[in-house]
Image (cartoon, rainbow over all chains, first blue to last red; front, side, top):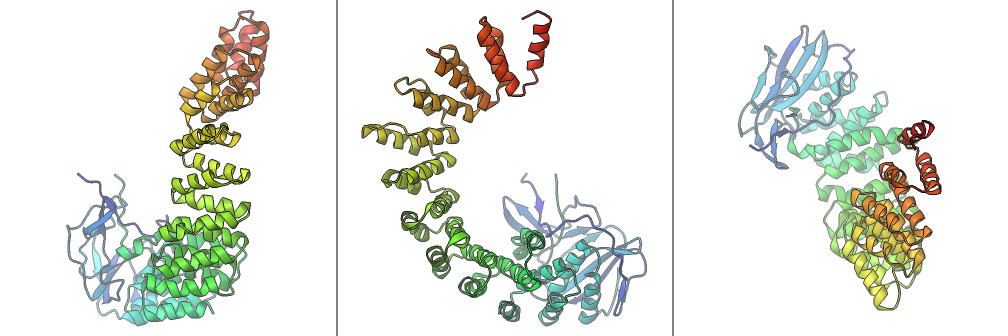
Length: 198
Length: 309
């Protein structure tokens, strides 16, 4: 059987715990466990899922298993994951945000434990909450910035550019925001880079 | 089986390492805040569509920016298979100087575009030693043995020849190096010092052993024997021991023992020590063992003190 690998995130850091608040705008995560909400997806979020990697090639989306440790297995086989909406998963442990994942709403997800689904979360609320997490540990910040970039283009661009220009932010967070800005592949993102080089 | 389950769209995968780089590299420089962001922006272009990345990379390469930023842009260009991108790199390689020029030349090797690679020959011919080194490095990066061989074959400059031959050694180009030796012999010459060094670098045991047994040129023979030590393999060390044992003169024996020292093979040297019945030879071998920092030498010393040897 061919060996299986999984698409890895940019930095798999053992995270220091987040010291910031778990509430921002309309989203409040009071207890430990997994939370989930849905918002409209931008280009990056429409096909975000876990993919199987064989022989150096992506062979298909296989869904994601969250909270099972690093040795996760597939949650599905060769599934279609395209969707106009995305789901944001957040894990809280010991009162602190531990993990943030943004996935296409069509991406099959299996989670160890219960998931509290939060209804009626707006894109603005989702973005505001994620921006607040950028003050957290580097890993949580990175997850938050990636999730931000998966939101609908206009809001994602504004949020990412806001982070880049926020001189109060850590420099690595600003650089990651720049990176994910490029990943949006939008005209405005490249126009912004052009201005940055002026 | 190690698996990962982080979620990220495929298009972002190629750039994951870049984030790690981007978050570390700028911290090591004294670049200004804006400069750091610009560097991060240019680095991020590596994962952008070529038609998006090219205009911005061009802006940097042709504009009034730091060499560091330009070098990042050159790397982005090297990954774009577009004649315009290649032309920009080539123009930088031709018209700039110093580190930026050398980096542009290396980027030609990294890109590996055949048409752009073909322009490296004229850069080599016109360049100084640093430029020639960069050109050869580009060929090494692109694994282009033939071009390096042609340079070595055609150049009349001894130093350029030595640089090219060294590059062939780094590339492990045994056949090309042997062809160069044959070429030298056919024109009444001999294997040069640079060639023998390249045989050692490339690990060409066969060529070195032949030269090490050739007694007509003692200097060349000595260099070849020591070259076997640079190879440092089990077979090369065995050849050195054999050469030592069958040496017709002291110079050859000394070269062989120097070779073993270069190789760091104290076990073989200890065997020679134990096999010797000549007090002065034993003393000489013991000195080498001590100089090598051999742990086993203490065994010999202890035995000597106990009167066993």
